Length: 405
Image 1 (cartoon, rainbow, N blue to C red):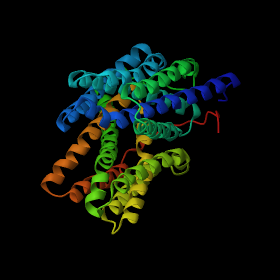
Image 2 (cartoon, rainbow, N blue to C red):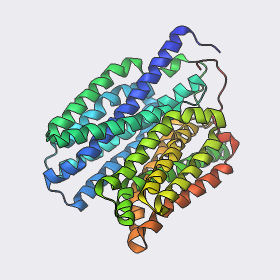
Image 3 (tube, one colour):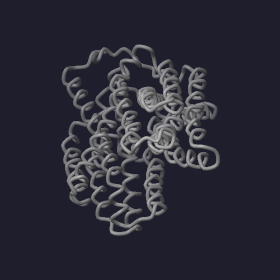
Image 4 (cartoon, rainbow, N blue to C red):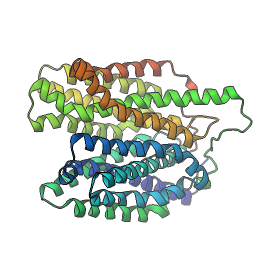
């Protein structure tokens, strides 16, 4: 079915608006991360207090994920994004104004919750847009999050280097993002205008075994997202420490491993959609998981710093396409509520992100850091095996609607 020109224009603007929300989430997360050291110093927090505050952020996100599906069901994706996109950046100001540990923990929890709601809602919006295009475009959405994260961290770092206060620097970014969110509200995608897009909802009369099968598929996809986020979290929190201990790398070289990983992941996401359209979802998942396992093995076992940095770049490329594909799969499972599927699968990922660094630390303390960092390698290998035997029914049932090429 060929869409009218007006709807094609609306679809293009909806795609731009959704990408903007991903970018905003990335900038917000990057700004948050860049200012954590300054917040710790300004409040005189101990490492334990900071860890507890960050746990509150994760807990807020985890709890928010449990209510996103009902919120979307009641208000709709577009309406929910209209509220949360302009509002979540303003919580950065609340974080900056926190005068003690208690207020900081509360503001962290609120920020984690708001960004989780925005993230799941925009993922649902991206699934609808992808269905309208009838081809894989999810990776390009997630690429904008990576770009935003780099931009937020860079701007936050520059402001910190020039001794701009925490409150003015975070407030400036927050207000700018909020204004951007207000401007894009009118351009958000309205799925009700597109008859060709199926709304998969749970049938009231569905047999129990159908529901059980749907939940098993959600759990399977969520488990794979868990592996991806656990791997990303392990690299983010431990790569610099490993480079320093294994290669006696200086502070810049140690951090460079994660910078290269993040940059290659961003590049991989920009080119990921064309790879997925060429080879298909499941082959790309297998190839990405294998590339991630090989790259991380090289990064850990390399005889010198140069090869180690190359390895971390390779794992960034490999992991770049995994989560976009899996989120798309969750949103396209038949005979089930796609919003609930995305929320539950994302919850599994959040658990991996929280548990990954802690698991690495526990194993490293009792065995070795190298042995601990090999855990994500093994899990990525398991991911490849699982994807090989995944049932074909979880693949996206794209139809040739003749929309845009």
